[in-house]
Amino acid sequence: MTFKFKQDRSSLTSGEITQKTYKCDLWRGGFEGVLSSGAQTFCLFIAIRYFNAGEITKSLIAAAPFMGMFLSMLLLHYASATHWEKSTWGALASMVTGACLLVSAWTASLHLFAFFVITAYICRSALLPFITDIYGDNYPPDRRATFFSKSLVLSVGIAALSGFIGSSILEKDIEYYPLIFTFLAFCAFSKAIAIYCMPSKMVDESPHENPFGNMKYAWQDRSFGYVLLTWFIMGFANLWTLPLRVDYVTSPQWGIEGSAVFVALIITIIPETMRMLLIPFWAKLFDKMNFVILRMILNLSFAAGVLLFFISSNPWVIGAGSALIGAAFAGGSIAWNLWVTKYAPPGKTGAYMSVHVSLTGIRGTLGPLIGYWAVGLIGAQNIGILSCAMMLLATLMLIPEIKHGRGK
Image 1: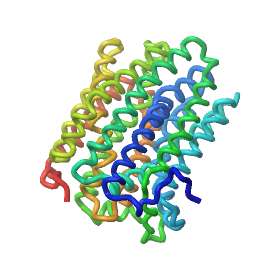
Image 2: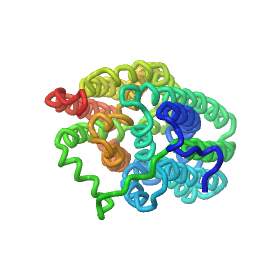
Image 3: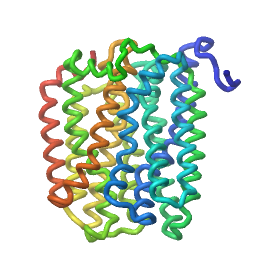
Image 4: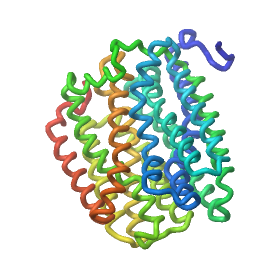
């Protein structure tokens, strides 16, 4: 069944395909910004402050987006047998996200809240290979980052704004959280419509019987696999600190115990504002600069930001670290979403992206679990120092890869 607002890709010129995709992606980016603020701030905050969640529940909620990334490879594999369009699968995953967030808004049980929030954010991330594949099909190679950056700026700007508004509401009365999660659900449904309207090809048929068959590209394409290895080290060092940042400024254990507004300011508003301001700058660099050198600069920025965040309990130092992390995420968002387009052969963008996304999912799922365990052993400050050292190692490992940084 095809709705009137869904145009057949074959009836459009290449310019019309690009513009239609761009307009739909702006809408997608706007609604995604609200969902992003939910993942970064509200889900963990409500679990900690309202439900008094334990370590395992907190780590599973924090890991949910990354579980979805890991499972995206399975979804892509089985979706290829349906002969549906990529946009249809992306929209379907977002609809499930909306339904789960709606249920989580009105349940009084911690376990049900956690289950539906985790399921919602698993589905939100599982659609990523379909979206990147659409970008690879519909955007010109020399302007992909430029087009994508516009929706990303909108997304992070709205994330900062919705983080501030939502935290202000919770500061007034935490009992209002069901209204916030109902609005998150509405945004997920709207995002699904925006994705569905994108001009799209059918999902490429998988050549593998094994749903994890795409993993072979990590060792068959040695350059691609080596960058994935360095990214794994760098990404793990970054991702295992993500829930710890919320915990560091929220839990009384570390002596800060910030208010809802302070938590939103440090975790969402400051970094998302920095991302919004700097995304156009990094997008231009991505389209023109050697990718590996760009990745090395981003790694060093992340290392400095994480070190500042955890090295002190001074709000100004934490804020400076948060700002630097946001600046790095501005470029990291571009690089993470689009770098496989510089390495993947024609027709393999979705397959390469599924490998990258799944490996991100593995480190993002294990990261919070190991992070909460490690912080109890060595403390928050040493976590910051260790993460910084791992990021420096990943940067040094990229030096031999500079010659491949212009793309294949």
